[in-house]
Length: 122
Length: 335
Image (cartoon, rainbow over all chains, first blue to last red):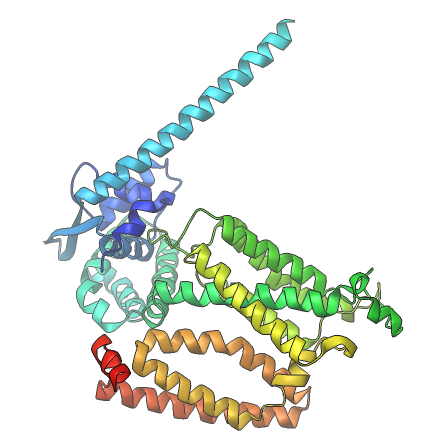
């Protein structure tokens, strides 16, 4: 059963955020999601396959992601996933939250540098 | 294709750790992704993938037995009971400076002004409780691991560590500290462990459960006239350890079966897990290190578990489920 109430309130961890972000521009299969998560994080987040599908199971149960078709490529079955409208909404909200944090951090760093250079020149 | 056969077989073997229903729906897809990943990665990565698959499969099976909601219920209850018990322990035993009766009877203190190092556990339990109460994060279904805030998890981890470390420090001698009794350490250690299997679903429920446990413990101590007792196993010696194993095992058996019928598998698992710290502490308190008695309790527990599993299996196969509808409750009231 979908658990949308919790999903909406949830603070999303980085791997989950990266999976949602990787799906933002269209449907993707499992290995493409792993590669995109690694690429977006500068190779820092290397999702294991089991972890990815556990996350996709949870995201599907939360109604944020859904299956979007299957195909066989080189004898291997691929399942595609896509964001649901709720998933896009949660991703948008999380991105806005992160942007706001970044803006705050940059503003404080500017203040710090300005104070430091003022003290240096005094 | 032939080169990947052994790897495919290894992956398939690892995937067998998942429940069969999940495998039917997902095995080929996950296998395809594993082989895609293996095309780009060295052998060591395949080993890591296999270990990860097995870990996720175990987590899934555990999750099926005890869904998130049940895990949170177990954790919340354990946190409440641990906090309440540690506070009562402090109030009725540790706080020597505040209880002149200890000094009057010439009872020495062994950890500064306190009776023993149990005061450290009380502080840690209270810190864990406060941390859970002020946490903004609740039952996050999106995260990939357990859901307590980092602070609560760290404090509960420290509590567990302290539960093991305090008797070791005491045994090593040195400062001459004494630790809480094994009975209380077993109870608090098991509760600290359970408190980490989930997170507290609601502040109100956590606060209420803690208050109820506090009231129950205080009542038991008050009714039994705690004042002239200097053992920290008072609660166990005076009340719980006196209950015979047959009564405890029989009651547990009946209650678990009833809960299974009324609330399903998850409800029964929650009850069993919630009761387990108390059963462990009862075992330690009633056997008092006597290996023969411990062996008898272990054998009795094994027999009880076998009977319980058989009963649960029969219920599972028969599909019996008792539901109490509002209409039947109303008609019962009218009658």
